[in-house]
Image (cartoon, rainbow, N blue to C red):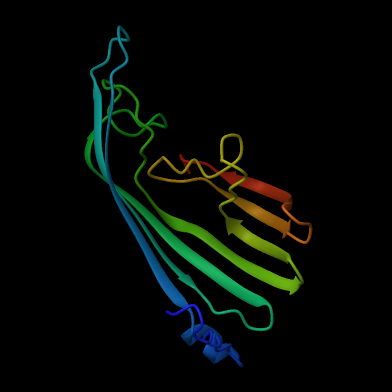
Length: 173
């Protein structure tokens, strides 16, 4: 669009029905091949081919409230590996790709205070470059946290994040 063109006014839902119908779906499919060859450990080279699928729905925001729900499935097509939790074949090297179907994320977002969001439920938490705290996004099954996260951006160039979690859903869950 042209720089001087008037901005489109975003239509906001006025009731729960519109909150649902004005929401959006998302999908992420990732085909991955992985191998593991640990020398001199008495096992064969591990090899895996898997399809990781994430399907989600995000509602529109109504009065500062919205929600998101996301299902996840990981299917292994080649499973010549030991998954580390009793699955696969112990004669192969380990690869952490368990087969799973689950509700990956299900949370409520509250944006009732300016520059502040409160997220309640099961969700991914990504801090900074995710080096020390995050979703382990390079794995076929990512990590989530059950709890509450408060994020505030009212100070210039500053994000304050507070979280309280009662469960970590790891890449093996």
